[in-house]
Image (cartoon, rainbow, N blue to C red; front, top):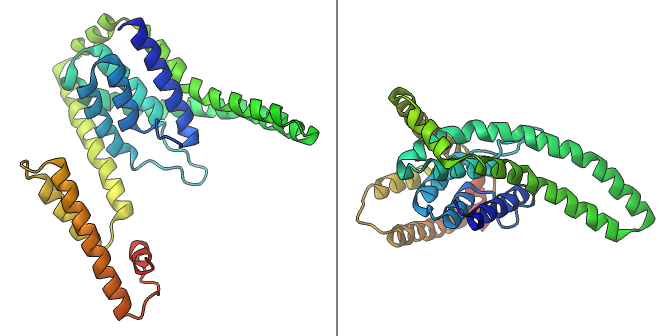
Length: 266
């Protein structure tokens, strides 16, 4: 990997770490992070496949109460780097997915460290607020956000110093039963992640659309634009039917389904 690629990977990792908190440009989303790393390393295709698979898993991750979701940014960046250094192309995507899950859990430790270090910063900002020193408040705000970026950039930089031949050697030295097991496990994790998404979104009104989507996806002659047009048409039909149903019922009211209530009030 060239020096320019290494610098760009660290930059992508830094922005992915910051976006894990800011949620402004979604650089921390697996599909975006993996694609950007594939773009700067010249290994775009396999990284997009990896990002798409990880995105299905990460859709089911959410911060609920005091529970913090696994670190999607670290999982995306680290697994992409391992995929690129391994040099196995699309064949290494399954192994990278399997490695991404423990990396995401390990990222929670780094998140805990950074948030612990951020606690004194809050007190510094409070004292600056008492003095009316807005420049100091802005400075500490920037420092705190940069800490989040370094949370991903430092591990990414450390991974880049591992020789590609060593990573490739380790991956190739894995026995077939282990690589096959990781491939099967990686595929199952994707299915579990998507099942979690369906569990959150499913309702009596949306099940027909899920079924139609799975059937249409099996028709390989359709392009993505054609599938998108079909999806948009179904959405418009649903909105029209919802309005008619709402008017016949007198409008408003709680049907027990959040999505249906939103559509009724649309």
